[in-house]
Image (cartoon, rainbow, N blue to C red; front, side, top):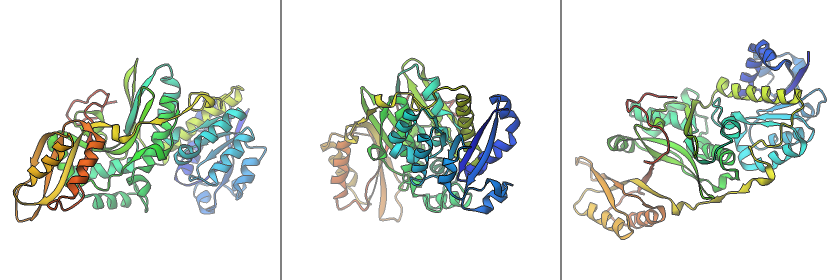
Amino acid sequence: MKEIRIGLLGCGTIGAGVVKLLRRNGALLERKLGARLRLVGVAERRSEALRALGLGPELASPNPVALVERGDVDLVVELFGGYEPAGSLILKALQAGKDVVTANKALLAEHGARIFKAAARSGAGIGFEASVGGGIPIIRALRESLAGDRHRSVYGIVNGTCNSILTTMSEQGREFAEALAEAKRIGLAEANPALDIDGHDAAHKLCLLAALAFGVILTPAQVYTEGIGAVTQTDIACARELGYAIKLLAIAKDEDGAIEARVHPTMVPQNHLLASVRGAFNAINVHSEALGSTMYFGLGAGEMPTATAVVADILDLARRRLNACASGSHPLGYPTDLLRKARVKPMGDLVCECYLRFMVDDRPGVLGSIASVLGRHGISIASVIQQGRGKETTVPVIMRTHEAPERNLMRALGAIRRLKMVRTRPVFIRIEDRLQAAVGSGDGSQKS
């Protein structure tokens, strides 16, 4: 029987899941492929990781370069993560005509243009479904199933750690620090969670989504990125009172060639499907001209969900190799030389409603002073939430604005921060009332 020989780089959480799936579903995959998938080497420093999976010493390849260069390796699965040596190893494999599967969104977001061009030149395939949304098949949907349509926006919840933290805050009344500690305890947050909670992981994923949806090269430096660390229980409660839920959204829109690209906490209407996405689940909405809105929902991280995406890419590239198809020509759905550099819309041009929170001295005239500054900058107030007055000398003032350009809001907030009665930096959260998607039933249930 024909076989596709696999070299695995990294046997951590996802790598272990890949080994388990190849072993558990070996007979099924063989039937689907008409050939055998055989693991011939694993580059992993921790010998105990291989022993835990029952992998014999004959599979251990302490030198990853040597594994990639082996003549009996047809397909390389890169699960080291990070920029190096992952980037060099992927390029070496592609240049040698070997297919590559990776889950490395940070590498592809920063250096994807070079990697995809290498795949196109060599004719080798590169699969990266696991880089966005865990097991959700969003990459393949954009590149293939939705390829006949013009996409206007792609947005959603793409970081399970942040969504889990915000869910805990909303449902259990915990503050951010408590919810983060709980996420670490149950293994959803890393010991150093900055990449997730500061929004950078979501920005990496948004770069790939924008490339597939709009045919542009977008780098993380071009994505406005803001994390969830400033969200408090006051904000969660006020959002609920106003009819919203707070989610960390990654948003990309194509407005006549100008790309809007941003990651930040967002107030989403409670009857929108995104508002009911809980825990570590992800949900990504694509709005297209002909089809309208479609949403893709599922577990966005974890050993087995992500491993399913890796193995699906292995199967796809193996089929192409066995049938002598040109698998690497359009990994992003466009010829690589026709991808254009993104012309990103400045955040100051963004027009939206906002939620504002000011911590101020509890004395007469404060509300009028803040409203006066907002008015001078062309920002009108839609509503105000009065917090109960107690023994505290500093109280929150909550406002919701009508739509206004963001540059006006930033100037106004700078002026308000200089008022003597304002004790801390003002907090603002953007409100997205016009997200293009079907709404839910209003009862918090999830639909797909």
